[in-house]
Image (tube, rainbow over all chains, first blue to last red; front, side):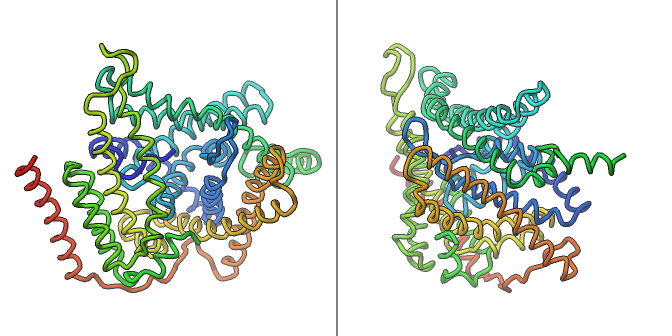
Length: 233
Length: 249
């Protein structure tokens, strides 16, 4: 859910922009280092960003019967890591604001913080923790995508509650209202996104395992793995 | 291509320098956000609509199609302002001044959205991106954004084709089939994106690619008359809003 243009008061818009800036700058440095070391990465990173942009154009059926689109933040963070995702997410949000009228330029900082920073980091943290604990890949992918989606919407609710506190119960009351509308209704959508991400990952394991190995998501198996191990020795 | 970008490529103002249009469109957006919503919102919205439908030559129907999306979010986001939780009136009650706050929010958001749409409907993204390097954005980031922009449209096109093929093969005939088709669609996009990037890489390597994507940017000179008119319009809107607020509110 993108916060629309002009929705946040000026001070909040500037503050969220300032909060997002260090993460985006960190991502830009990581991306610049990567491109300088491997010039061919420009095209792969561009393809990754285009995939993220296109993913948000998919319509997924919700458990409640309605329809929504995936945020793609969980899958993006698992495949490309959160720092890179901060930059790709920022560019994607900029394109969505200019090409689709989703989100906005004054609210870009707030949207970047929820969708390109908080969501991907939360999803990636869950994914890494579960991977280290030895959980099966598809379980970690599902929970990573689920939490990335849900955290994105929870942070959006916090942003809106801070901007529009309830006249009676203040920030907490407003959080209850916005979370009731955006975060609670998002739970079935987060489940849907988790399921879709698992299905996508399963297909990718079958059709693009080499790409996943290069991205560090999957390990080499069988003949290819043994061959690489032998070369390393 | 997406409808807004198609309109931008055929815009009457296509030849104008992007900085002129950015100062006008984003200036109107910032004015709408910073001025008091009443009477600032309606004044800025009326001025922006007049520029959009008049000199900029944007079709009304296209504008409405693009505008109704942010409007939907604004209405949903404004609804919680109508009610209050807790307090002496009970667990849920109508918020004092709720309708006024919601109305002001809708005015501000609508006016601000129109400002961005003015920029988007007159300036193709491909005209803006290469110029960002001069504005201090690192070249590798701009290059990645350019590749994203170009591959994005191809992927959207191929996704539409895959979706049509899936529908023709009963891929939308039941809930399970819809899920299978969606997963296939997303995975196909991933594979095609990486495949296209690989082929682009090979093509560029054959042409002496050194890590920088150089593109031709259409030449455009800044018009001081346009900039002066923009400054005059923004000043008039600020002054008009403050005077009206002082006199009548």
